Length: 373
Image 1 (cartoon, rainbow, N blue to C red):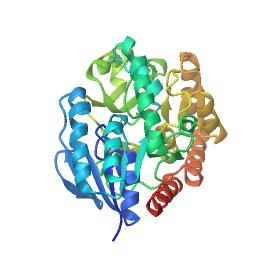
Image 2: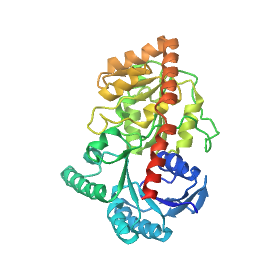
Image 3: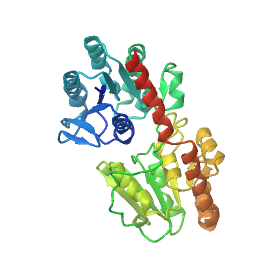
Image 4: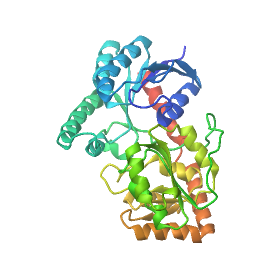
């Protein structure tokens, strides 16, 4: 009989790319019985993964102090051989579950929470250091009791025994592809995918229709409605060339892949302002742009510069220098053959080294080791 794995998240959507499309499906294909407990509107089985639905809470307080307990009791009922959870708010209850079940538990560290908390605008500034310290204490406890998976290389500085499983893209985007191709203008287009926030360069990206005549900018990802209004004001009088898909709503990754599939993009955008949270991250969107054959225009952070220029797949610039940004985009417009070659170089680099097909072996090896114990 195959081992049973229970994956838990109270924060992420059920079809999160890392949790569902990469990890859960990889484990199911390897022969494990996989149960995913996550916020969803119904219980169902998708791609051999059994989804056990959590209700959607009205606010963060109910999620942290109510939904986590609901997830705990559902997880306990599954009587799994391994538990794999993804959110720090679940650490206390997973410690309790560990005491009750005495089975392996994995904590998957997605974020550098110590720096991300300092950027949470909905938190009063005075509380941010206190919360960061509290999360750090929880994670220290987790590192002593659980196996640890790390989504970024530099997380090993805090979790030296962790297993690094990077969030590189799948080389082939197959099932669950959104088959309805989006409408895109027949004009030079720039693409940004992922959550649309100030920390992720939204204010910079919104200036591009004004900086580069004739260019259209597409932002595909959840965007707060109030921020969307600000972005249109920034783009004015050329706001008709700023396209935001995902105002007030989550955009499924299948829909994002449909935008990649449209083709004809001049470049993928990663013009983030410099903040401690992003300076050292290997963001998934970078490798997705490369996998889709898009040249990349990115901030010249040392790690990003090393990847982009080292693989000759785009241009890095100072994100706070509008003139340098405009020159980079105009260079791609006036050198189409070189831009095409950058896209091919990026695609080749993903096929050879930056892909989930290699990373998944680390995940499977960790599970095999834990189950042998």
